[in-house]
Length: 134
Image (cartoon, rainbow, N blue to C red; front, side, top):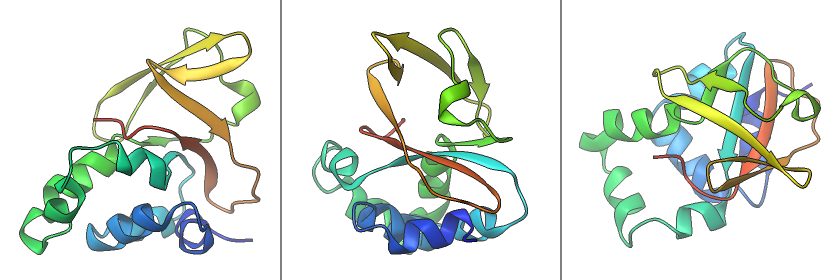
């Protein structure tokens, strides 16, 4: 069974996330015991960011800023998609509060749609986010 980093490494829709996870050393955390819930922004999510921002964050001197951005997507504990409910408040590992909303069967964090990602993961669970959580 793969850990969160290994799942990111092989998913073709998470190429930008793979680069950012490794550049920020977040891969170390996502390979650890956990469990973690990772709201993984897909490539389309990163494309919505200000032009040039990802490249800037990938520069070595911006590693801390990049790690902080990625930490907005990681929650301690395992929260399977089917257990996410309207009104749930999850706190990320850097203290940001994520408010879950459910409308017509769609789960979101504000305007950010959350999609289930079916994968057996040894140290947590991963959901896909269509927008980067800032």
